[in-house]
Amino acid sequence: METNNNIEFGWLVGIFDGEGNICITFARSSMGYVGIANKDRVILKRCLEITKGLGIPPSNYSPGFISLVWNGYTGTPLLEKLLPHICNTKQQKRAAIYLKWYDPKYKHKPQRTRRLQLWEEWKELVRGEYTRGENRGPRPHWL
Image (cartoon, rainbow, N blue to C red; front, side):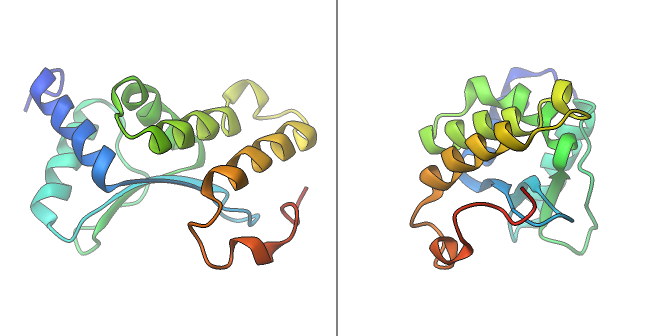
């Protein structure tokens, strides 16, 4: 399969637009991920083939699972490719915050203030999406 093919890439963008998930969680062990979930394993297999062809295989995948997951910094190359083509504005905003959160130039530098600002942007964007969101306090416990 040629993944440089615009049709294949467009198909992947469409699937990600509808089935993709971008999440920043606020626990030390798992701070964020990019994922595609679908019960149809044929769709997931095709997504897997396309992303492998792009040189961006998921960090977590097993044939028995119903999702492809790119954890932390492994999600940034995928989002960098997809972002210019994503149609869903909320997904675009999530991707932009995620890319700032995992910007490699800040990987080994203190990020407390920067991440707190991004956390506020993220919290505003996802407000009302999760029932427990408001009960988690004003900022992540690890900041």
